[in-house]
Amino acid sequence: MAPLPEILLLVEGEVRPAEMVRSSGAAPARLRVLRWDRVRGEDFEGRDLRAVVFEPCDSATDRRRREALLRKVPPGVARVSLDRRPGRVESQRRAAWADLHLAAPVDLRVLASLLKLGRRCEELEEASRRSRRVAGQLSRHLKTVGELLRLCSAETEPKGIIEAALAPIQRLCPVDSWSVLLVDAEKSCLVFQACGGPQMHSRDGQRLGMGEGAAGKAMRSRSPVLISRASGAGLPEIPAGLEWREVLALPLMSRGRAIGAVELIRSGTARPFRRRDVRVLGLMLEPVAVCLENVQLLKHSEELSVTDDLTKLYNSRFLNSCLLREVHRARRYRSQVSLIFLDLDGFKNVNDQHGHLAGSRALVEVGAVIRNMVREIDLVCRFGGDEFTVILPQTGPEGARIIADRIRCRLEETVFLETFSLAVRLTASFGVATFPDHTDSEKGLIQKADEAMYRVKGSGKNAIAEAR
Image 1 (tube, rainbow, N blue to C red):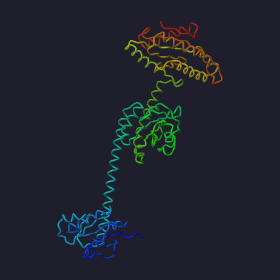
Image 2 (image 1 turned 180 degrees about the vertical axis):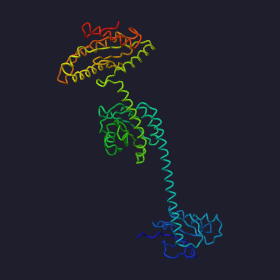
Image 3 (image 1 turned 135 degrees about the horizontal axis):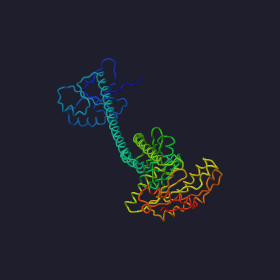
Image 4 (image 1 turned 90 degrees about the horizontal axis):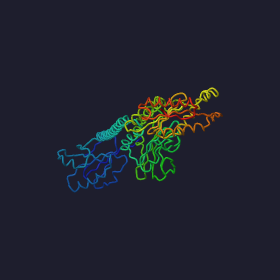
């Protein structure tokens, strides 16, 4: 059975307790009586103490001493003033350091009920304050989510989305360094897309295994991972010279799928991460992950529309649009742009002798050879069948012939289909045309280069001809 709550009654020497508090029926509380001259601060430390009941004092000296004692009453213990003289002025009653003012005598049951109601009111007020704090936090979080959606939806590149998102996130949860890693499905790894903070920019573009480090663990478990340096764990994603205290890794979840991870790093002087940080960041990062996946899907769709399914080179649709752009640029800046058109010699024999599967694989290997022999600014396209083109920006006829001869020699030297236990040799016929030397339009470039290539076909193959 739970002990009864205690009420401490402080009285003058000549005052009887019954003049202050009366009891009718079963007592709902234990009444402890002390004289003012015997009370000490430790008398207020009872665990079950609910209230300290006293009568106001007229003497200024006694009032100051009593008020000093009443200041020692712990929080949560009510201070009740009982006045045997109801006509006393209000200012004197207020000066009694009381939470509740009543007229004496008061029934113990009524007093206990009032104290119980007062405590319940305090609990409700505290609950109301907590609710207002939570509502304020949710309002700020929702405002930040709205800001994130607005900023991220305006970006069309992953890096732009990340930089737009990290600014409001940093306001809610400041960190010293951070990094964002996204999944590279083809190579089955995580790639550093963006980094911030001391020494972290050296990680841009680097790769991390799917299960490595805090980010890899967060990806695998699809839940936040918090690692402290005190645990002695080494993290490959953190530069060797970076001083850090904690790393919080959170998966980027979009439509139930993990597309990457965010790592937040705090140094030794910063406060440690809290549970609230994890909850808030999870709320913030979900719309960011959806925006990142949408951009990735859009870019993938765009790539598929201009990429050859077999060789993964650009297709003829991209050739036409890119060539138009390069011709306009060359016309504007009075420069040159060249086009190499090449056709494999006798490629039909590969299909006839070894089958179409081997022929398709040979085209993939040819495309890889051409791509490896050109410059970074050059664009390789599969025109169709066994025909390929190379766009050479800022290149005249002489430079185009040099690059075409480099490709021709490498094709002639390469042994194809070795992975199929075959040894196939291939050559190609090349045609080269330059704007504005040979034509004044992008369509003319394709036509002139094609005509030059057919002249090679008719005169021995495995050579290069320039447009006329």
